[in-house]
Image: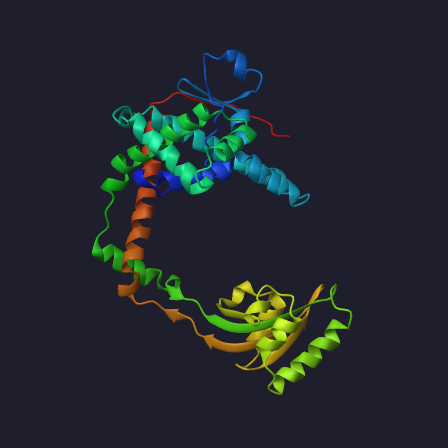
Length: 337
């Protein structure tokens, strides 16, 4: 959906992600108005919102990165359904965009051109280290002119401002609501269990000797008291080899399933060996921390923000439905096959 928790001053961060991954924004640059018939008839009309025309090309270009990612994941019976879901979501985002831009609230928002220019400069500075040429090259790669992109940025600033004025500034939650939410969702507010591990990774393709036999030999040397860190620096091909194989404190879920299951059954200080398809892992459980529930005082601001976000989302949805009742909207049935 179009609405998300953002404010007028956070727009640069949102637009940064859009430049790099346009599918996350779902604001197609190629939207044309109804009088430009020669352009959209060649593409196919997905929807008409008041005087705005949304073409199939607008939507498909906005979801292209995610669509290609689905395709590269291999064939799937559900792939068409997933693409259709992306298409519907992007279409809804564009419909909502035009409804908001055409709203009475939007007409009262005046964004000075200097503010838009400042945002442009901030985005180029933050995302492209101030390299305007690189920024322009990315726009060219995405077949988008600077004027189109700047217009989209200005629209998004207007929409964020309208949201702040119409929705966010009017949302409030009471202390009793915050406490009730905490009690109901108490299981969510925990510091997850953590484990501290050290690991030596033997790459089967790089070891002339039998990696499994070498792993067992290293395990015995470690159990006899030899320095784990020294052996890791000498033998390991893992990412943390130069740190002596020390992974630090991590959540167990980031470990491979077979290593995690083996570690779960081990005592602190024990050494284990797990053989994978391409590597052999020697690891030691250095320490453990159990999950800890967070007290209400520690999470009260977080709970309040979450409740406000939920209320704002509901208010935004209700407002969009109201805008739809007074707008002309025609959605065409489009085949994506």
